[in-house]
Length: 334
Image 1: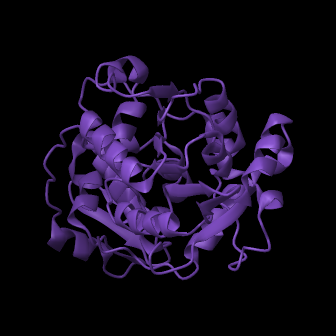
Image 2: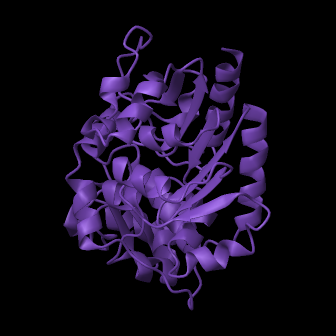
């Protein structure tokens, strides 16, 4: 299990980088001796070294299920090796995606530069030159889980080891943790996009606005860019661009404290968080600001449709992840 220990170390490091993973987003896995160890749904990758967050899944049984289009592959609970599952947790909502990749080690991250490319109308063509040195495939948006796994299966080749998921994120796969780490670094460097400077929040005005309300100022300077960067706020107010955006922030960014929303962007002032907001809300708000700071005025972006949003909000697996995320989580200061 030495390689699994190495994966836990890498997972914790990746999970602590807000430009790669935010809150309970992202997941990693290892296949060994017929068992696929995958991050548990609702857990945070940054905790991988300190907590037992990996769930054992019977890989062969899951692959047979995927081949016969078994609905049980949606949650993958039926394929958990209960004899090895000491935590009793449920496997990641992306378990089927990891199972499809033939490599031993799979890393799925929500790299902000990758997302900034992946939400653009012509993303596949835009990325072609940047990823020419890699065995990669672009996967048009599909709801995470079984729908995404089916979309991947239709484009996966035997040597594919990099996936860019439309309106979602990045997957890399390799036969060792060291090789996966190197591959992830190479791809992230290849797709890196410059970000506009963060315009500081008007701290005095923000504190005054929050007085007597159920809100407090956001902790991180970068989060406030969602309110102080005009293009970021304009793009985010009425649209959502990737799954965690809608799941944790709602169907658009609220701009009025009277809304009761978990996160409110006060134009030109800063971001306020509701006192009851889940620990994942600020990291997800910061991620949205980071993505939008990499989108230029002339970039054509594509938002999730009403059907896409409905499939996320009314998905039992996603509801489980959100509820699990609340338990034992703390606001990440990184």
